[in-house]
Image (tube, rainbow, N blue to C red; front, side):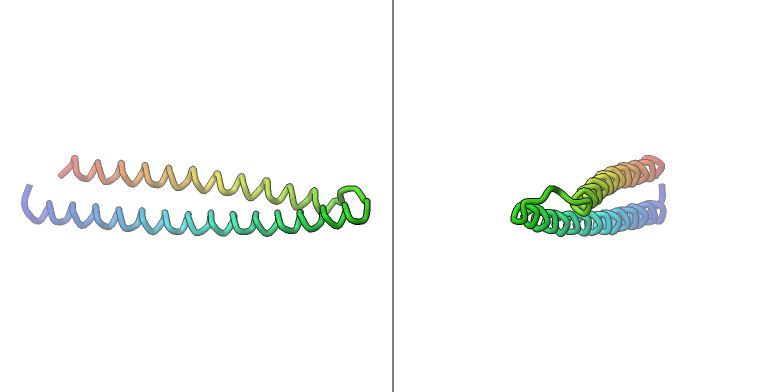
Length: 102
């Protein structure tokens, strides 16, 4: 293999690694956003439950809906984590294929 082919292969590997890093950062940002949203709902739930306790009432539909929303956010986070892992594995495989073909 000539020097130019090695250089091209190296550039492709760097580009792939850079793209993977960007995708990982974007996924991490989405996960953090959803985690923050969960925290906000948990605070609202805590406040709603305390109000119910203070008034001697039972739980409201609002609390149930917030809990369901938190469940959905946890599911979204797990899906993003799986996507992140799949993307990393795919990128690593592609880089290995390029190295093997060089």
